[in-house]
Figure (cartoon, rainbow, N blue to C red):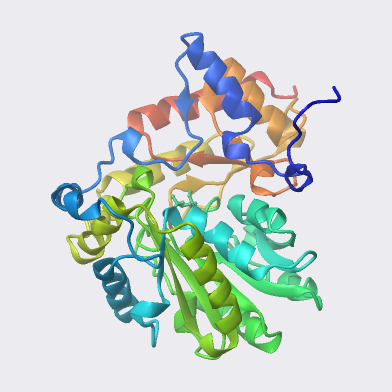
Amino acid sequence: MPNEYKKSDRLNNLSYAIRGPVFEKAQQLEAMGQKIINLNIGNPAPFGFDVPDEIVHDMILNLRNAQGYSHHLGIFPARKAIMHYTQQIGIKDVKMEDIFVGNGVSELIVMCMQALLNDGDEILIPSPDYPLWTTAVALSGGKPVHYMCDEASDWNPDVQDMESKITSKTKAIVIINPNNPTGAVYEKDVLKKIVALAEKHNLIVFSDEIYDKILYDGNVHVPAATLSEDVFFMTFGGLSKNYRAAGFRGGWVIPSGAKNKAKSFLEGLTLLASMRLCANVPTQYAIQTALGGYQSINDLVAEGGRLKKQRDLIYYKLTDIPGITCVKPKGSLYVFPKIDMKKFDIQNDEQFALDLLSEQKVFVVSGKGFNYNDGQHFRAVFLPEVDTLELATDKIAEFLDSRKIK
Ligand code: PLP
């Protein structure tokens, strides 16, 4: 077709499996009146996890104040509250002027990559990853280079593999902690090694800590930026998960550590922030209340809390299924189980996700969707109530049983 309007070449190899072909299939099935059990996306509110009333109340109260554009970095009370949060968690020397408020962490990830990368620059990204990191790097002309996370070590990053992939073009290391999709919470020793590597090779650390309060069994989260003042860190956080406000689109990024080395990059990021004028302002009015108010997330993850019960149920039910093994999630909202494919008549993880959806109406995402290419993993979200999770895991067991090689 000579007159076709074609997408840019930059988009040619990009995909986003969480909303990819299996997602479209799920939508088709739903349009035909089928009921799907959605274990595909970490969106808390539709599963009855309401945003705390106090946050909604303060947003409504401030709507009139939120009619105009704000400062491109964000409104004063939001950035002040984020600065206070850095003091609570031990990130040193962060000033209000350092902080960027955005339309969710997603926007800030893309902006950071666009501000940093020249064509061919390399960024180290975990495998498995949260796939936006990979697409944002590629979209910005960079080359995503994946380092392995080790299932046998509770999905902690394999620091040796990370080091072996550093080249003269490497600009930064991305870590996601607590992790999506594995549920890992990284050990302090591992983080220290990563930070030492960043210092040795003069790399930025982008630390995506959007799940920093979603921790089970007393596991402790160590913010990477607390481990050195000689490395430049960008720490990401937001409202979508800890405060269940994914639809509000509120997030932030906190530069810290060796900021003196990052003046030009931060100038670029400020330019991009000003070009999009500001993050949506009503949501910015929720940030101070969220960070300063009652932290109801702690009740949800505590013993007897709803998220903890759901994490326990899905973990025990999945590991009961012959042919499935799974590392118990220490944090976040996900499990990343392994299927021993040689026991089943299933080609790979993608076919598993597609056939499970078609036959049992359970929607999970293949490991490949998270740039993990062994063909044997999938991610399931444990946001639905225990009854639904019980039903979903029974259906997964039934599906695998029907494909068992006799
Ligand atoms: N980072 C990670 C690791 C995530 O899992 C998600 C969403 O699932 C995001 C970032 C995007 O967050 P936001 O809603 O703030 O854009």
